[in-house]
Length: 83
Image (tube, rainbow, N blue to C red; front, side):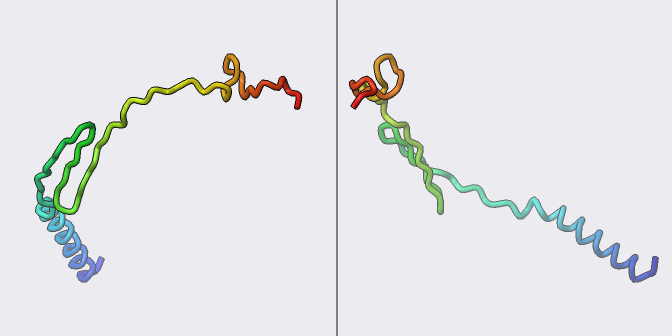
């Protein structure tokens, strides 16, 4: 291995070590969130970001007759297969 190759390898190793040492300093700053709640929804905001969490209301599902048929065996339009 020549002298130039050894110098290049040393410089590359030093650059890699420097990036590993400096990397934790490049973390993003923490920004406080403000959250407000209204009913079943919550809105959290920070600079450049907003998150909405909502819960849908309870639904009273009614029977779907005649579309689920008698006993739930498919469509039932009361013609027994005849037109």
